[in-house]
Length: 192
Image: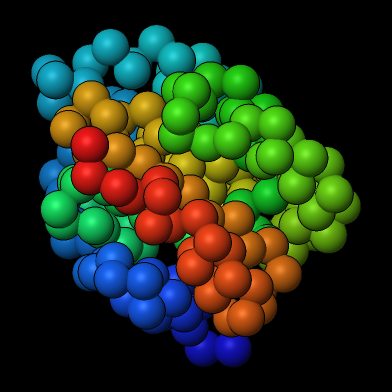
């Protein structure tokens, strides 16, 4: 499956229900330095992100010395200012389970995500386990970095005026993504 197929399936499913999702433009507040480079409007997230960063074995010197750049996100519903993140198998790790307790209510269905992490982490924790990631040295560096970046989005997006919706599709299936989006997105994205 090509990169972006699942996200395109989610956007396609939403479109069949009259919900237009566009590629999320990159934003400065979501960047490679994480909580070390947040704008003042998001400063209240710093203590929680620091604790998670430490729990995940992050290295502050490495994180701060990364080349600065904005991080990609998946989709955006412009009308409601809702970021839609499509979470495939690699997001359901024991490291993400560690960060779920810090996620704000409403951004993630914690019980559902905890259950999915429990079910998928034996496989997900092995997925690219040797892939290194600057800021998260050692084994599972990329998985720890991904869990941190997911929490970064969960915490900072609402502080920057965005709603956050996550669509879990751990089976990498376009059909699964389509069904999840067609079922959940129209009601989740209802403009309030």
